[in-house]
Image (tube, rainbow, N blue to C red; front, side, top):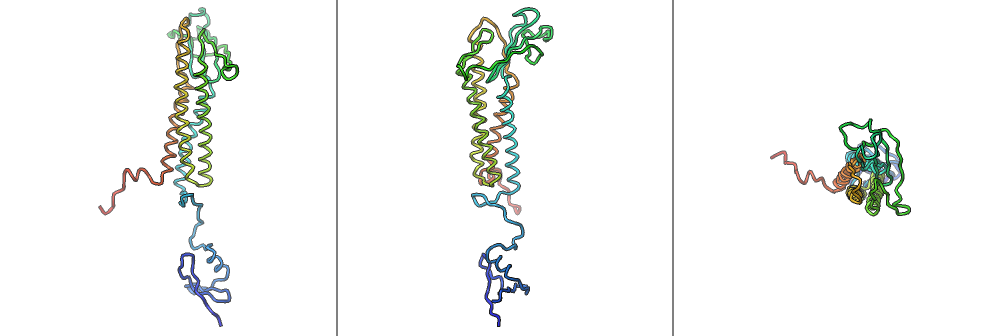
Length: 286
């Protein structure tokens, strides 16, 4: 004689009677074996269909749409990082150009420098645009001589066209740029952790890192420009024309892109959509 008992699932609902011999009778009349009973009692039933995704620290699973938005914002931040590395690593921050006839009628000397080193280049006057009064641009072919600044080793100032650089401003601009790169690395690590572990909490420190890095990049640009103005004011015997070059454009665009990327991460880290709060959807019945 078979004795039966009632089997309930995880939520307390009655699934059906089961025989004492190990067979279970489902509501539809089909007999299931001990494996199904074990899976039901341990919470490993496949009634739910798809496999559950890992949940975040707030208890909500990261959807594919949300993951795609995070990757898109990360791509924006990576663009800012690449532009920053390109601008910081090159020496075309400012170009210094005296008059074409300052030295002789055949050659003239131009210079350009960045955060780490400066270069002087001798150009042929015949190759310069006749409508241009100063020597340059520095992209023209010529004999070039580049040397690293001694700000970071012996503490000596550099002398170009009888003018002396201000090492305090130059070192401050370089340190701000380096610290911004460090914050970019920390932000990238936080986003990598957020995507791999599916923890939305890492978006908040990542947003702070990218916003601060963008602000520091722009501050580095401002400090560098002040150092150029102080360099030009150190001596007025040699008149020079100065032009900010393409490295400055890269750094300025990088600062703006990094701030935008940080704001995007901050919006994605919010527990609610700001668009739904600002523009609530109207009821379809109304």
